[in-house]
Length: 109
Image (cartoon, rainbow, N blue to C red; front, top):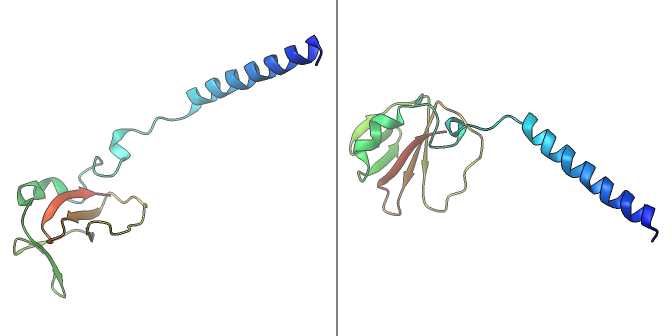
């Protein structure tokens, strides 16, 4: 390999690195507000924090926590290990429950 070939490889790598760094500056940062569990409270999850530890029930009449009905445009109860879609909706109320069906974490997403 000649000296000019080595120089061309090094220069090409430097140009690629500089381009990557420059493009990183163009990317919009994803704020914590768009992450599951950290987003806007459009679904009313913050009002349910006091109900953590209470049993979650789903039936024909809807969803309840500790015997009190819960209302949201969409409600998803998530059991441990249950697969869920990764789509994000600020109006959907997600209720993470433990193995016994008790509320662990309410969050919008």
